[in-house]
Image (cartoon, rainbow, N blue to C red; front, side, top):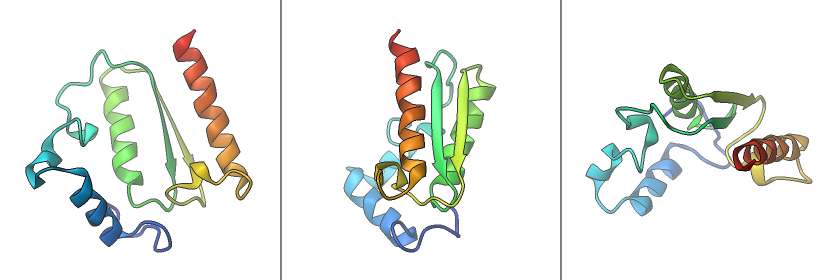
Length: 114
């Protein structure tokens, strides 16, 4: 978890709170179903598009996951949106990057379902 993040939408305390609601037990943090970066073997996973935001405290973990996928031979596209915060993806009509990120995701899904 990055020290520098997004103090307006998602900070360290908010992330800790989310984890406390998301996990049944604290030990579940090590389960790759809760934290995919902890997966031992990613070979054979489907192609991935990983979209990150510059000011997201979860950015580094997401980018490490993208690197792990690529190192495991998974076709992976990583796109970072500079100047954006966690949750920007849903801010269509507010920030242009949201529509751009959604279009990237739609194209990736289109390729996956063809």
